[in-house]
Amino acid sequence: MNKKNFSKHLDLSNYTTIKVGGIAEYFAEPRSIEEFLYLIKWSNFNHQRCQIIGAGSNLLINDIFITGLVICTKKMKSLTINPNSGIVEAEAGVMLPTLSNSLAKNGLQGGEWAVGIPGTLGGAIYMNAGTGNLSLAKNLISVKVINNKTHKKIEIDRKDILFDYRFSSFQNNELTILSAKLYFEPNGNFEKLIQTTKNNLKLKTDTQPYHLPSFGSVFKNPKNNYAAKLIDDTGLKGLKIGDAEISTMHANFIINNSSASSKDIYELITVIQQKVLQNKGIYLQPEVRMIGFDYPN
Ligand SMILES: Cc1cc2nc3c(=O)[nH]c(=O)nc-3n(C[C@H](O)[C@H](O)[C@H](O)COP(=O)(O)OP(=O)(O)OC[C@H]3O[C@@H](n4cnc5c(N)ncnc54)[C@H](O)[C@@H]3O)c2cc1C
Image 1: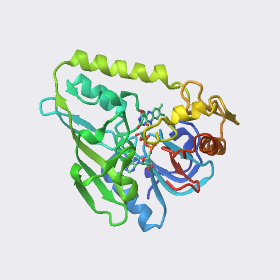
Image 2: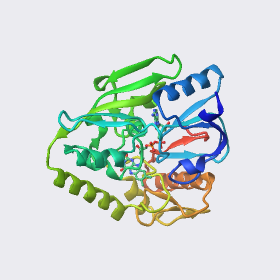
Image 3: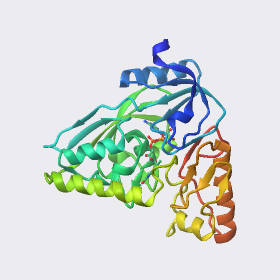
Image 4: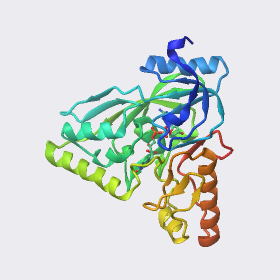
């Protein structure tokens, strides 16, 4: 691998929205699918572990030395929208707010909810990110992937991908998402779409600590319940460990007040799990993915 492809010993705290993370042994931000494929192959041939990150908005990375290669997709952001057919082709690194705003401006309906999610398309498909019962799974036609082991590039139809609440089959396979093809309904009512998109963003910023470093909801909502309510009812809002705090605005958010370590955050997660289990008899499953911890993702 030549120098222009990657950095060595990069501080990952600049690549997560909660602003913590360790040091990546190797780090790369490919600008094209070709470069992305090359990096995946490079790590395989050199027996280096390879971890993919998008915008790092659902990630807790331990502040330790992370061996191997970390690939960030954020610079793979080609986006093609056909306003007549409603067909959208986007690379993995396209940000959801960009997608959402671009859809509205092109008169395409169905992406207005995604404006407040600060993640990439690849991360959103992997996590099946959404709000209420809305997610990109509804609009997906197909996903182009590379098999991390065989390096085979294939296109998978939507019907062959499993989606559930904050789950996609990509969490259980060895595929990396390169790009996706989606369909959004041509609507033509630009003004209404733009206004709804704006309102959705306002709703998020009014109810969540959007201005502070966090990774969104820490825990998945248990069946017929809300993690935020369980945490709030247990009296945990405002609890701090080091500089990590359970948000007083939204109990399912942990915020980094300035210099929280990943261990502060991890400990806070464990304390919440213990207290809610003692108080409510419910074990909260993290939604957040972890790198460098001994926690089963
Ligand atoms: C303020 C705030 C609000 C949020 N609101 C919401 C919300 O309303 N709804 C919601 O669902 N989430 C929400 N989130 C969480 C987060 O934004 C989503 O889960 C998002 O989809 C994660 O995308 P990402 O690009 O940041 O992924 P990352 O956090 O970088 O990665 C998440 C996982 O996806 C994998 N991954 C990323 N890209 C790829 C790829 N190309 N191929 C294979 N695997 C990949 C990573 O390996 C990792 O396991 C919020 C987060 C914040 C900070």
